[in-house]
Image 1 (cartoon, helix red, strand yellow):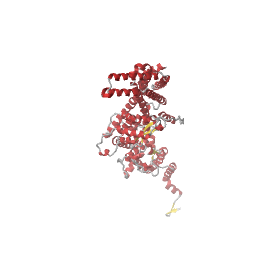
Image 2 (image 1 turned 30 degrees about the horizontal axis):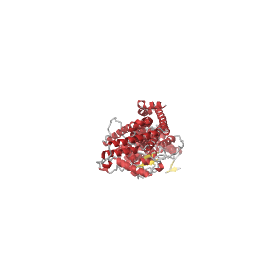
Image 3 (image 1 turned 135 degrees about the vertical axis):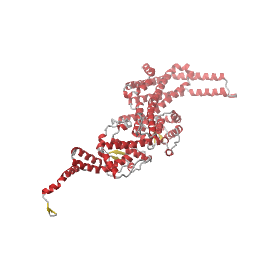
Image 4 (image 1 turned 120 degrees about the horizontal axis):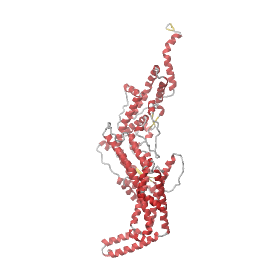
Length: 627
């Protein structure tokens, strides 16, 4: 061939294309390597190719670096947008984060939606950069049986976790109508710097840590100060953990007669009305805030109170716990269904949890509170019934000379039951919940002060949450501790303690029937009326002291004879012996289980319960006597 009259030979062509042969060879290999890949996967392939085949090859490195800089620019823009404002525009699905919530994708998130963290977005492993994935620790998350994460502190988070979480933090702030530092446009110099940071592992790690800390500080201040998450947790402690007796007493005074019925016969509407009334009487009204902006935001504890309601479960607490224990091995054993009473089926719940409080009180955490509530509520109800029985027995004081011998076994059994239930309730409330709550509360208040003072340079060694994840981890650890130490994770102990409480409740029911059959309350009402006539009566209503004492003694004598006759019947004596045997058997089993488990380090809390129950060997001696 001829070009401009100049003849070109093969040797000349070879000389002309020789400099490009190497380039075309590198490009051909690159094309074969990255074929069908995009986004993060494309960048990872180019980085791996350069590291494995072109290390020290100046021409190959130059070509791949040029391609990396061009390919990394969109990824770097998305990384900057996500880490600095929680925004993401990824039409080709190239970034390491995929938006899974439509509302989150369209930026229509509102507080009323109350979304879960897991519903927002997820990590696409194939698009994760090599420099991030190498620094990540693939450690499985440990969870409790109720779904609460055991470890989620900042120190255990990988770089991938921080990228994933930082954008969600900023989006949460946007959802709360808070301004967040975000710039939608960037100039050429900033884009060039973004690419350099993205391709430099050290710079990228520093950028991720800085962005994560900035987002976390902003959200932590928002949660602890403006939305006062601590007040919501105090609300949970008051009502779900029955911290104060005013709510429990006021509610039961109104609803007790309804709740003793079987579940199909319980009027749930009336119970809900009594709940709303008791909450309205006992809720603490927060003082008005001085900041006008904060005054515009309704107290979330008030919103929690307005959405609080009762659920009536068809399964007992034991059956629910067994379901969770069996969920791991896939067993589908079905327990015999029976009609529960209102007290056994009662459970607190919310119609909705306002956002962003729902981030701290998600479904799994509320479930843990519900299990503890059912345990404490039933135990306190049993204690209430035993105390009422003790009150009835005080009416028999004047007759004790006559009936002491026959009534002694009943009084002894009642004393043992009260000793057990009061110490068990004390253990849950003051040995488990209170110390763990105090530890968590002090840390959250320290974090609140840390955010209020904006003291980012605070180098104090005092341990308190400095990030949102640390705060969530503290709350999770609190829940795990109280759930575990209230025996809810030990199926053998919880079954035995439930049998003990059920035995106590049945005993109080039978004794209540016995007291009603003796007409003891009627005799005391007559005595009260006559005493009133003695003190305030005039004319025909007046009664002398001698006449009053004679009538009273006569009634006491008749009542004593009636009660003594009932106490001597074989039916009553068999009932007391049977209750004594059953209670002693269950108590012996419970103490045996405590002794077997309390020695291990993870169950050291059981030593407190065993010491409470067996102080001065009271329980051990009573069990050995029965045996």
